[in-house]
Image (tube, rainbow, N blue to C red; front, side, top):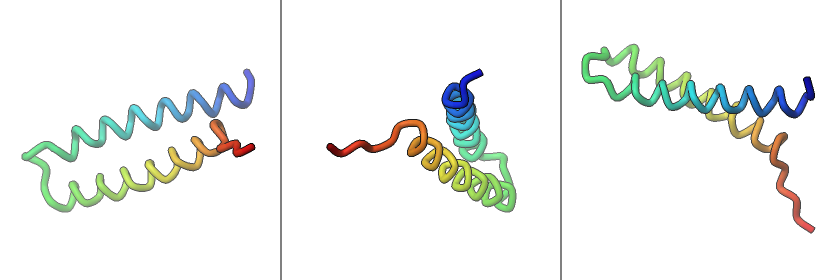
Length: 62
């Protein structure tokens, strides 16, 4: 499998997990400690998404 394709698949997977964490965080039954832990995980996931986006879709200024 092509390396770019693997990174694109990973990016799609991370985006889906990020959306799922959003839904989990919005649950009212969630305790505050878990909510903070999920928010921290969501932020680290967002950082990885941004890093992968820069690799997969480089900003080309010509």
